[in-house]
Amino acid sequence: MSTFPQIFRLILIFLYPVTIWSTEQDRLFYDAVRAEASGDFDSAIKFYRDATKFGHSANLHGNLANLYFKNGEYGKSILHFNRAIILNPSDSTLLANLNFAMESKNIPKTEKQFVKNYLSSELLSLWIIVSLSIFWSGLLLLIYLVNFRTNKKSLLFVIPTWLLILFLSSYGTTLCYSQYAKLERKVIVFNADVISGDLNSTKIHLRRFAGESNSANTTVVPGEALFVDEGDDGKPKSHRVSDGGIWFLVRDIENNKKGWIKEDEFGWVLPKNGSLF
Image (cartoon, rainbow, N blue to C red; front, side):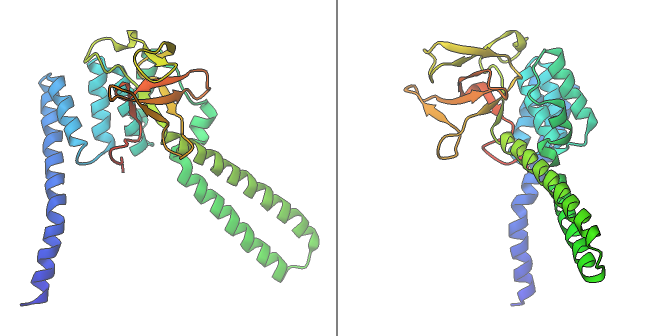
């Protein structure tokens, strides 16, 4: 038997599940579009959520965020706007919609404007490219001056300048990476007990200790961003209580609010059950 047909069949076997997944995601996406057009927001949300099991896109999460906003589920709306912007950070419409959702519900922002504009996690790859470019261009310039020029004064100017610029770019890359690391611990809170309605009026309690029976340490509003603490093992700090529920220790970026929150009261910006990418 010819080898080529065997190879062709193997390729089809590997590609078949991918094709099915892609087709299923497209079907669910357009089912959601049709349901939304007919005004059936609950069904549209379900179809979009089912579609995320097969893949992610900025368009999918942006549409889901808009539907949650229309449905009054502002925390989940802000969560999916965050995911959409991670997938397409250059989309100004998504950013404007996120800002509108947060401002209209008085959701506090977690990032300073300078950090948001210049040191956000989305710019990490750019900072790395800039730092590497500065390093190699400076090194090549140094080699040229040492081998083809004997003026020591030029070296006394070039070397400190190069090292200073390299230090600043490396420092910027480090700060940007710290924002990226925080992104893996970032969560958006929402009220799990109410399906729709004005959830912004419902406060979510952060407990002093894990468990429903413990007193509240502070409160947050749906849509507010928090960051999960890490344990000594580098994993999210969590505790399973007697009823089987899992609680996580969280705090805001300024460390002004801290407490335990139940796993069904928030969503990870970067899903733990699958990558956005």
